[in-house]
Image (cartoon, rainbow over all chains, first blue to last red; front, side, top):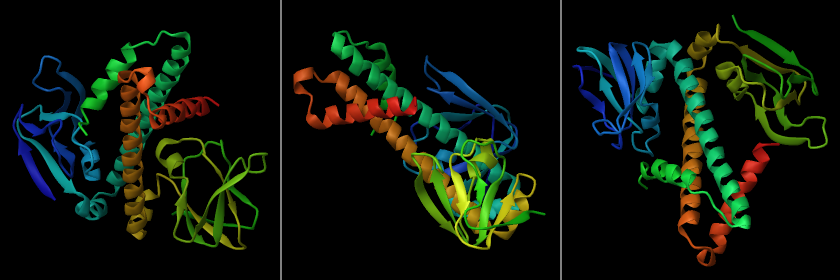
Length: 150
Length: 153
C-alpha cells in the first residue's frame, strides 16, 4: 500500500483515465469534479480524512468517472490495489463496512439510473404510437453514454 | 460477541419485507432462499450451505429483507453479525468479507454494464428511422420497457 502526498490543485486521477486502485484519505481534503478544467466543470463532492474514493477502479472495466483533485497542501492518501485489499481490511476493519456501504450505494444508484433509461424506452414506445416522440431525454442519455466511450 | 442461533427444518430465519440490520453466516446445515414464501408465487432462489452468508444488504443499508430464508436441515446453525460485532467476524473470517466485497464489485460491474447497454439501445433506437429498425433492436427496446413495467409492480 503506497502513501501519496499532494499539493493543493494537484490532480490525483483524471476522468476518463484507467486505473485499478482505490484511495483512502489519510489527511486533508479532495474535490471530485465532473468535466474538470472545462467551462462545464462541476464539483460533485468534497471528501475528507477517512473517506474512500476510486473504488470503481478496482473493478477495472470502466474509466474513472470523475477527476479528483487535492484541495489542500499536504493532502495525504493511501493507494490500495485489489491484491492489497485483504491486508488493508486486517489493518483497518472499520473500512470493510465502509467500502461495502459505498459499493452498495453505487449499486442502488446505478440500478435507479438503469430503470430511468428503461422508463425512457417505455415512454418513447408509447409516444411512437401517437406519433410524437420526445427527444430531450435522449440527449441526456447520449451525453452519459458518450463518457463511457466503448 | 456474536450470537449463534439454531433452527429446525421449516423455521423462518428472516422474512421477506421485514426490516433488519444484521447479516447471517451459516455455520452448519443449510437454508433455502425463497421469494413469496408460502404465497402463490413461491419460488426457491437458492440453497446456501455452511460458509455461505445472507442478509448483507440489511446490515449495510438497513434495507428490508429481499427474500425469506428458511432452515432446511435439522441443526442449522447461523451466526448473527451486526455492525457492532462485524470487526470480530472480519478477524475470524477475513475470506468471507473479501468474498462479499468482490461479489459486490461484480454486482456493481454487471449493473453498470446493464445500464450502459440500455443507454446504447435507447440512443440507437432514437437514431434509427422506423423502417430500418432491426428485430434485435425492437426486442431490446421491448425488454427495457418490460423491465420498467415490472419495476412498478
